[in-house]
Length: 78
View: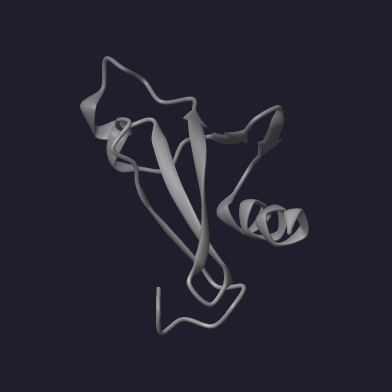
């Protein structure tokens, strides 16, 4: 992230498990924030469902339908 511009984000799998994503936002040079995104609508009986994006994405009490909405929300928070 050091070479990224302020305001850029990286979305990646989370260490919290297959129903979570981690979003890192470069807030300022050397200052980053990490946000946990809970993926809903995955079928625990179908392992293949863990390979795709959840039907809903939740940050706190806010629910989103796609990663673009998450990105816009992240940018508006800061």
